[in-house]
Image: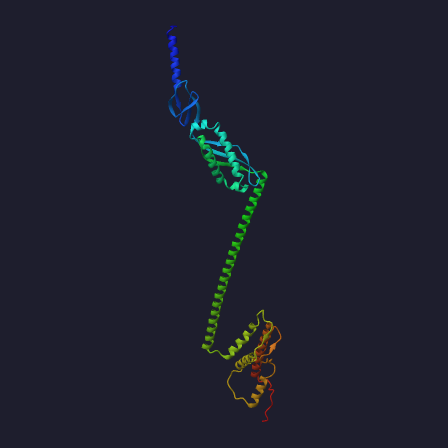
Length: 367
């Protein structure tokens, strides 16, 4: 090999090495800290950068994107001396690569320890119930302390969240019993309210029903009374218009008497005084019809005998206002029987009056 070629190759290799050592390409969202002879020189930005070979070197490569750091559960004592395990989630971002590399040795460990210390201070001033219900307050207080402490490290804490609060097992059981009792209480209250509303609605419905039934009964009674009044008025007008015979009225009166006592509530029945008069009227009616014929002059003695025969004491007499000590139905039947007997006797006497063999019981004439 030509002795001239070897130095040329060596020079070329040196040039290539120098060029490679001079040119630095930084990716997006990355920051490189450059030291010159062991001292911080500058921070390389994304893109093509030139550095002095041999004199400059890359010390740290940092990611300036927002990072997520989840800590392990840590025991924390509350104000009421209960130990709970709390783990947090931290969202942070490097804002100053030089401070993040030279102000703190390990910023993640520093942030973790600062979070635990601040969390214990915050939780130590709260009881368990307040701890479980005050997550927003705890997060804001943690972020304020961490943001103030990590600012000089070139790190900005964007958000701190409590991922879980794990109380002891006995406390969990007590809380579950309390929650179950609260739910049972609310269920009982809701059930009682439902029953109360149901009873109120039922009472209102019953009230409206009774009112409507009473109004319906009232209207029905009014209409029934109007109908009965009109019927009585029509019957009264018809009777007066046709000028009914008193004998017919007396007979209808006797027919109506048994119906007056057919009520189940009647325990006694007062026979009216007009009953005897009605029986006599019916008797005269049938007697007059039976003896109807051509008139003949009657002798005084025969008239007396006829009157004595007509007034024989076969017809049972009822005094006005007399009270029968039977029940109502029996009294009505007895009155009907008396009326029927009176009519039969009147018919028999009428037939006897027609027959010439009927002896006269009156006194005989002397001449």
